Length: 186
Image (cartoon, rainbow, N blue to C red; front, side, top):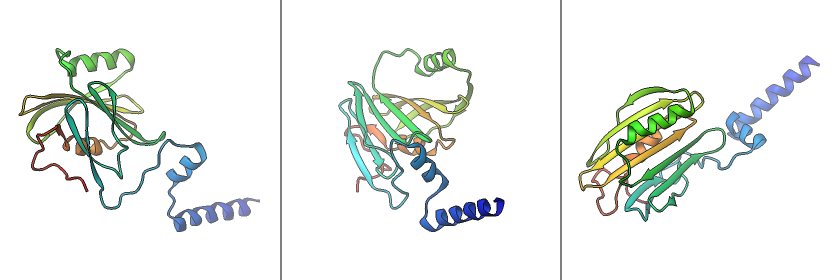
């Protein structure tokens, strides 16, 4: 019985490697997922101009199409139920100290560990913090563009890799003020 079970397990593992399916793909198939990662081939950059005066140039192989969640907020997501990232890009003038207020609200809901976070955005000054919340992490950033627009960013990720968030934010800018280093739509 143990030999048959072992042989079946080896056959399943061999089948996975031959088909190119990962363990993650199998888990998504078994337990469901909202979206499947499209692949990491050549980047396919698309541009989204939000009604809030913010433009997002994003890799469509990694990110879903952005949407206007509210009048002043763009929402963009990536991943699936097992490994997701959500980013909110908000333009408003109601915050007195966005980073501090966001951290206080988060700490009121869950235990966190705060880390300083280095973020560089073209044609802007940026302040950011990252919170480890156990099974996910939060990044809050305040980006003041040279043209006078301030963007407030809230990002949540179940992934330990926050580089995709940083790469996305380096291609977010006020509409009509495209930095020279921004990715270009395909």
